[in-house]
Amino acid sequence: MRWIGERIAAALPAEKLNGDYGGSKTPLDQRDLWRTPPALFASLDAEFCFQLDAAAAPHNALCWRFITTEQNTLETPWADYLSIPGYVWLNPPYSDIMPFVKKSAAESANQIVTVMLVPADTSVGWFKEAIQTASEVRFITAGRLAFINPVTGKPVSGNNKGSMLIIWRPYPRTHCHFATVDRDELMTFGAKLLARREAA
Image (cartoon, rainbow, N blue to C red; front, side, top):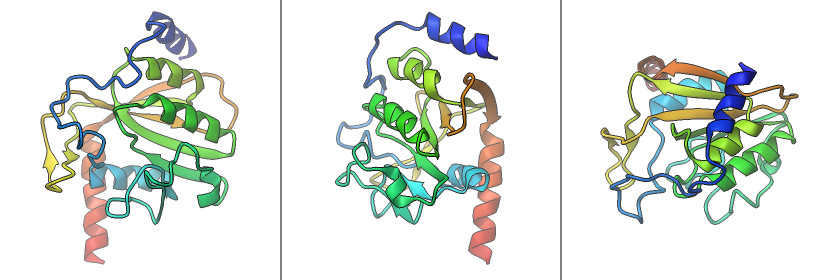
């Protein structure tokens, strides 16, 4: 799989937009506030057992421990919030993803695993940067995610891009592995987990 990652990186432009989430019709003041679908998080949490939501607010944090905008996750050592080795969930502001890619890569040296949810766009500068340091890119296939509207609290379909997970692991990296996961399988599994918790 190594040659695939190298070919993808070589084919990408040296520089493209870093803010790079074009085509959004969401008002600017809401664009970075859309929330992760709970079923998606529940499904991934079953795999990774997240300890920290690294880009959250008190009303929408997905982990007991979280870092707010005011606390500035880019400047805050994530190890201050974790038992090492630690597992971090990150749904970054899509208006400027590159700094969060660099932060996740840096934190992997501190025995921290980061799972980042981002648009499935391989043409942008931050993706080229990510596959130089990440352990895995996992494309969510067979459908697009319905993120949670920050105003209404309701899921909204019609996302103009697919999604992918970029995963940084702390152990020595040989190459970036590329994989796929079916959206409906993720969401169905997560919904079952949430239903069990509510019934308990």
